Amino acid sequence: MSSRHSSVPASPLRVDAHQHFWTYTSQDYPWIDQRHAPLQRDFLPDDLKPLLDQHGVDGCIAVQARQSLDETDALLAHANTHPWILGVVGWVDLRADDLDTQLARWATAPKLVGFRHLVQDEPAPSLFLQDPAFARGMHHLQRHGLAYDVLIKDKDLHAAADFCRRHDQHHLILDHLGKPDLSLEDPIAWADRLAPLAALPHVACKLSGLITEADWQHWRAVELLPYFYLALELFGPDRLMFGSDWPVCQLAGSYGQVHHLFDTAISSLSTAEQDALRGGTALRLYGLQGNCP
Image (cartoon, rainbow, N blue to C red; front, side, top):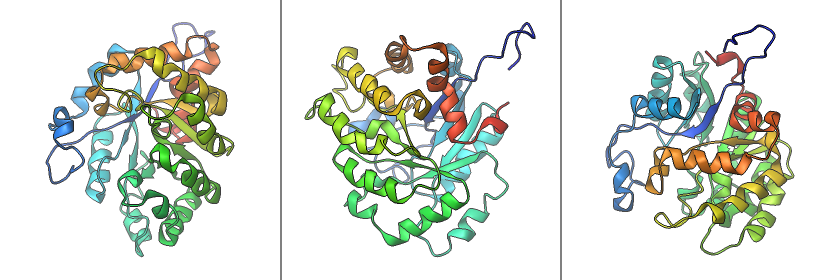
């Protein structure tokens, strides 16, 4: 980004570090059931770009939402067409014997910055995180400098901490603050469960997905802000990043409401700390500095 006067440093890029695109079919996205009926349609880059522009967000990281190599291909195709899609967190079968072959199909895809598996949807997420084949795949990813997004729910935070402790050769990024169960647990109890993850210096966290863990119709910012403040205390701005979780967030609120909640949570921080949360952390941990337009 250029500045008007050469003596003034360029403003850092602002990044939405967690959002999704899809061309909807019920077969491809079985998790989008009748409870999620508003999501049962296509959500594509042209739908998101006006929202980014409206809120001063320069680019985004597209994250997988189905377990398919085609999903990774589709997200990379969007990223190749739209320079403001800065990176892709795709999917690959980390347990596969031919993992090298699967990864080779993206060897020339510079916008592929990491991978994710829908661990939260496995029958036994905590056991899945202990799978030796999955561990072998994780070691492979980390040796190649690829980030991994950890998607689990609050009840599996302990298993996630053990998992992250075993895989410490590259960045791991916890999605959606570990999905706290806002109906059952108060913020302090959740923070106690999150602390072992935050104690690991290679683990970061996304300030995302919180409004859909609350009551979709009746959530209030005053109830959610303590989770942001505690995450800031545990991780610090250099290991936290903003993510909208669009379009999933629309089940409980608009893109603007998510952005306003985040702005409120960080309003008392210094400019440098806000810059980290708004984009600097995501750019650094996903290795995106060289990919930005």
